Length: 290
Image 1 (cartoon, rainbow, N blue to C red):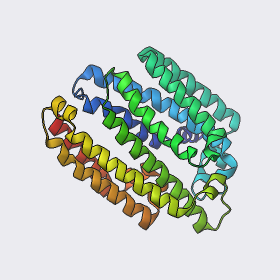
Image 2: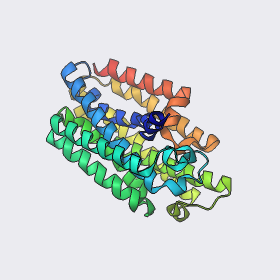
Image 3: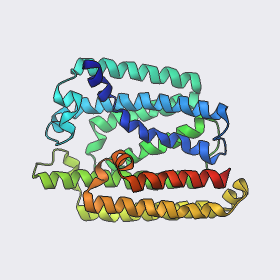
């Protein structure tokens, strides 16, 4: 039972976010090159380890707030099933393992992993309480995963991909904050995360419109960019834009109808249309690019 609680503390479901590391692998046309795939997989493991380390640290700092949350109160530290000293030891082990593995892969990956840890650590203790900046820090985590994915296989990534990732990560971060704010209001609880009091639902809605529009436009422009057409030797990548638009519209529907934006990973795993859409997008990209 204790082992199970420690495993839950790692939040393995959240490792889904680290799939962003494979974006450069797909768009660099190395998806079927086992050498590159293996490197990307090791990078995925390294980032999963450091991500779990960060989650544990965040849970330690947020344990009191989590106890008043309808879902987060069941987290091991908040529920008291894992002690703080035990959690600290596990976090230290994960940190050491991630650094050692990253070092064996490449120096750039080690730097990115360390930078990710530092940013997320300060996010847990301070940055999450600063309006606007908290959203950008969350988004930065996704950006660093993509950059790490490029560094680990030593390839250059298109500026358009970086731009798309930036808008996507900001969109998900804003949706997450909106979900937290709405949930707090619905439950009639005091807003324990003080930064939420600085926001307004209308502001969240406007920011989501801006970021979703930016994501759609930047992706569409990427598919028709001269460099993209030259590298892939085809203009057909533009047809994958329909999946991006469907994904945006579906996510907005779930946010406004079900307030599902608080946990984007659960949306991907539980909402069948969203999951199928992502799979179809991946398949279409692979078929067109390769």
